[in-house]
Amino acid sequence: MTRTIVVSGGGTGIGKAVAARFAADGDRVAIIGRRADVLERTAKEIGGTALVADLSEPAEVERVRADLAGRFGTIDVLVNNAGGNIERHGGSGGSDGIAERWTGNFRANVLTAVLRPRRSAIC
Image 1: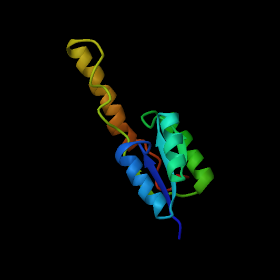
Image 2: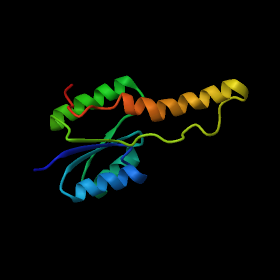
Image 3: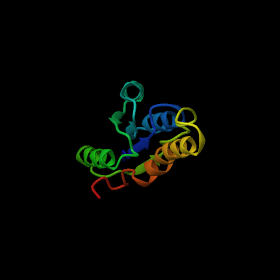
Image 4: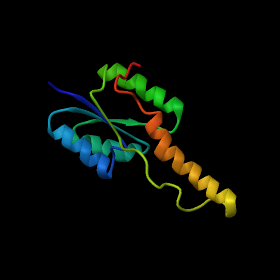
């Protein structure tokens, strides 16, 4: 039986390796990420579906959830891999700069896991 696998952060690194492994095993794989060019290239390499979205944005999550429901109905395996230390540099100095960087990392690493598509794409 073919499973439906969704990997957030599936365009590069660990997410790409996980998605490629599932695809090699014959599963249907959808990868989600923010960079369209990276996702399209990876999806083509592994034979998967690319869905461009910033999963730290609730409206983007709802759009992806509806798209997944329409394409696949339900999700058998969900790999929450999106995130990273995206706000290491930049921002203003002092406490404001620290808060700005931490907020960016919170959005990338916590909200992407909390606001993710659920196993049942229609819920």
